[in-house]
Amino acid sequence: MNKYMLAFWNAIPSEESFAQLSPEAIQVEIEKWNNWIGGIAAQGKMVATEALHNTGKTVSGSANIVTDGPFTEGKEIIGGFMILTADSLEEAVELSNGCPIYDSEGRVEVRQIQVFN
Picture 1 (cartoon, rainbow, N blue to C red):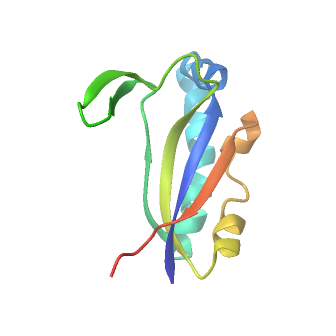
Picture 2: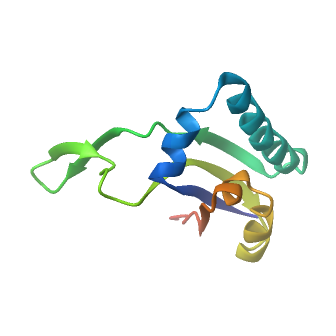
């Protein structure tokens, strides 16, 4: 069984709109995510999942230059991630079906975690 990371990409306006929702509407959206994540967890395939804040810092190059990021001129940001186990990349992609990010035309990037021996 291999580990995969699902990165949840969404358009910045979608993320900003989410932040403007009422507490009740936010709870409805969180419940969608909890149900989808719970389905993967019930299969024993979820390792970890976290949401990310929209702001942070970027450290670049050998001089470790620190700038604000993610950059607001970008069109998309990673809003969170999940680490899961699957027998294949195809299965990991299949497990992304039903992700609530698709409701806002977001996307899921599925990548196998590389193991160094």
